[in-house]
Image 1 (cartoon, rainbow, N blue to C red):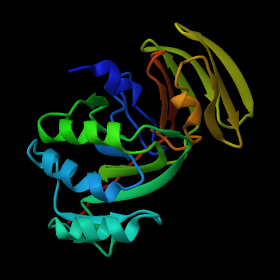
Image 2 (cartoon, rainbow, N blue to C red):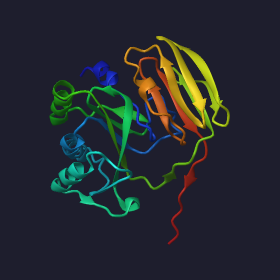
Image 3 (cartoon, rainbow, N blue to C red):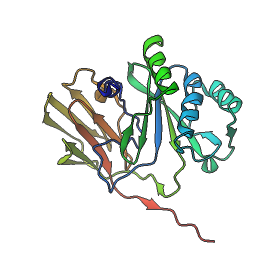
Image 4 (spheres, rainbow, N blue to C red):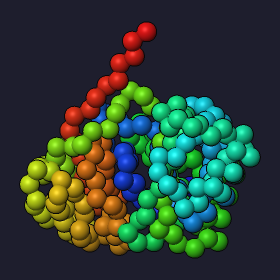
Length: 244
């Protein structure tokens, strides 16, 4: 299976997007990310496919913020056997919505234990081809976070920069700054302003990293796959404790 095409459609979500460059000590929750104007058409079959891998933690879902296709998505999931949870904290799957700063080809990415998993087998491969070939480019990004109660997201303290898997720098979020890095395909510029970091310029072909939203929470990441470049927000994490 052509993984180059897969990585060309790799995109960045503003909430806890892990990648193969991440360290083993900084694993993020399992996530499914979908680009497309009609996620209600794509998410039910993708979730059914993932259930065959045993990745689905349960059958309840909730929305973390307002979604432009919220009603349609809710109806599609309910028709497929999912139950809407009134309390977000009790939902097995949590849906969030954001706009990319520029449109990208419709696609989906599944991330588990800091690695991108190619789940395009059988019917999911057909679905991916249909999305990629017959649907218009979209700036609508839907992220599905799988339930994980062990980690609570906190504001970060600094942006750590990795190139080819090696730590090449750190930018404090307390101070506005910018820094230029040389990667294998050219230069990448990282900016920190108002306690948020983002890629302002990149020499890569598709410039998906430069379209990503700014990051500021511990665990959030921006990735430039062609340059093997990663910006990761680091800082404190709070571990929940359940007392019976």
